[in-house]
Length: 112
Ligand SMILES: [Zn+2]
Image 1 (cartoon, protein in one colour):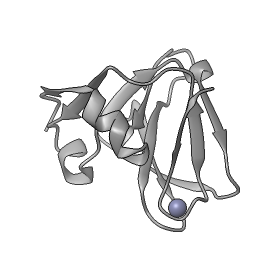
Image 2 (spheres, helix red, strand yellow):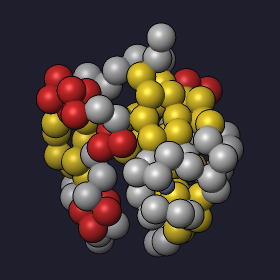
Image 3 (spheres, helix red, strand yellow):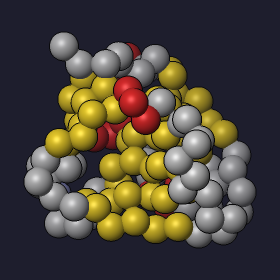
Image 4 (cartoon, helix red, strand yellow):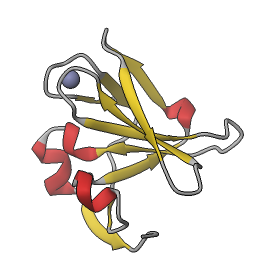
């Protein structure tokens, strides 16, 4: 049984196989504004469901697309614009509070 997460309205849901142990609070110009806490997975490890769509935001060197629920606006995940890049980030704030309490939160400094 995986770990489930959903945006506030439930239109975007996803599931990962393993609970995150390390969570990253990225302090770059976009992540600190979103207030997201990231856990990183390979795209094949994250299963998406729900009926809602996402809007995306791409900025800077245009390598990452930030996805937010089209209905409630929650930042759900980022994905790489380049499909060959085998990494994505999901917002642990969409999981249960227990997942955040159990994880170690680290900080990283990204680009301004
Ligand atoms: Zn939503």
